[in-house]
Picture 1 (tube, rainbow, N blue to C red):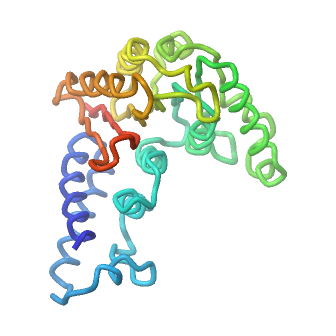
Picture 2 (cartoon, rainbow, N blue to C red):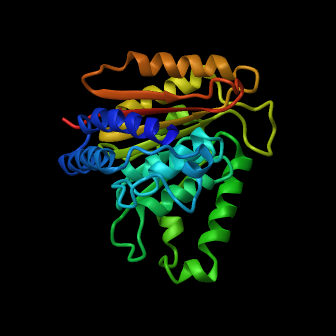
Length: 285
């Protein structure tokens, strides 16, 4: 039953997203709706136990799901088996294209920066993708640089990515995310701006993102984002000031015009300290 409810929700979501994305993406989502209807009508009306329906040996989703990986991650998140960051990454994959310019506005320990790098580049280094990664803490910049060196400098990665691609395609800046317009080349088209709001994991918990600079950063992201782009936020609220920052994010998203933006929030009801996911899609004209 849960999987059926999820398909219904995804069908509604697909209709919303289809109105804001490119024609090829709309066709994919329309195909998804058709496959849901076909599968629903063709399945026998028999009852299955909840355990059986969640079993990996008999998956409840169609094998030819048109958005690879997204159903598994969302269902996993709904049942507490996937993290908010995993949901964010799978959403990014539906938006980011090879060769895109993206901004990691709070690079932290570098995991998001690394994920973005792999989404915007390829092994040929011909696509020209670039990641601008920022953080106000020097420790975060050093951690990100170290992760990139270790991961992309491994023997396996060197056979995939051209030597020196990391330094050329990932640019690190020790500065506040509110100043992102200062690091992006003028008249550039930015596909995505991503935020992890809170404190540096494993770092000084007294150093946190602040509501005032986050609002400035969101306004800057709105200005640099291209049509068909995404502002993605994972908002951690378990620390002092976290809920106030979430309220600022919600107010900003609520103020964006419906004609130009599609904004949504994912939040756990019975886990008051769980991170909150917020996505703001800028419609294509």
